[in-house]
Length: 89
Image (cartoon, rainbow, N blue to C red; front, side, top):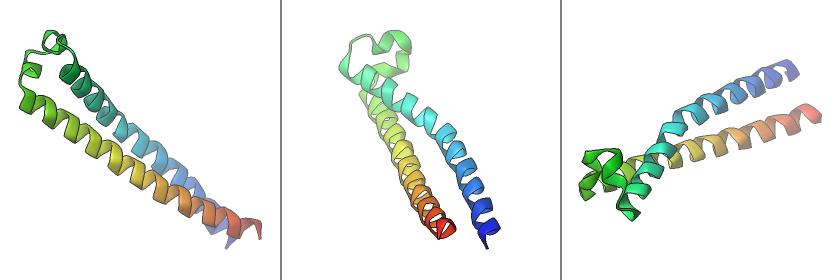
């Protein structure tokens, strides 16, 4: 049983890394969207950033990816914590 818990903990660690890598583009999108929204230089990066609908969409998509990643990581962290408590007892 302990070995199963240890293996699941390793799997959780791998999943957290994958989610973090998937979440990175969301952070980039969110950051670029905020930059374009609150500065006049946004259009100099990409001309498409002149359109506020595109900027709002970029912010929304980036935020959604970040929230999803945060939720998944929190759930995995809680599961890992429960498994570690069972392993220590």
